Image (cartoon, rainbow, N blue to C red; front, side):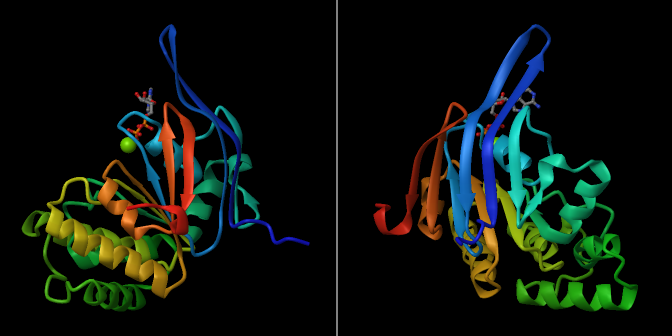
Length: 235
Ligand SMILES: Nc1ncnc2c1ncn2[C@@H]1O[C@H](COP(=O)(O)OP(=O)(O)O)[C@@H](O)[C@H]1O
Ligand SMILES: [Mg+2]
């Protein structure tokens, strides 16, 4: 018997009702992703990339369809179950970093572990170790406003990886960064994912990022118009 895919998306549809208007963000998405795959979801602004990511991460409910991750149907979970699922399985990296401004780098990175019930000494040690791994061992006590964009995003990467999630989602992770920093951040993010055999789904409208992925899924107007694995990708 064939093994079930790590991520399975079936007949996913999302429509937003805006007063009298209905905006269809995703039409009908069917998709499977294997464990350890680095996937790039590519497409123009408004094509539905963030919506697809948020639905796969269990941050928003679909209008129709199903998302199964590692055998768990997340679209059937209630809010509490979803929150627990995300805590235990999912890391998220945001375009605007989304660090808490009143916490230091080390405190920001340790926070997800607090939600997982890890005691303080172990949280601090783990945060320090991951921040060292992203090259910020000398910035542990800096606040977000005291760091560059690239440093803030490295902190964001450390926060996403500190819980050793199975699945990492990144929504335009380099959207606010210059091209040199973009390369550093992508090398680091994808390097971690490969080293720990983690599955990573990166949303972008930047064609340069496609070079990092095993697979490129292109969306247009809420539909998949292309799905290529590396061998057939021309970069
Ligand atoms: N919360 C929302 N309410 C209403 N419409 C939305 C919402 N989120 C996204 N949309 C619409 O859905 C479409 C896809 O948006 P999005 O997934 O953010 O695209 P992308 O990330 O590719 O830029 C767009 O037309 C957008 O305006
Ligand atoms: Mg988006």
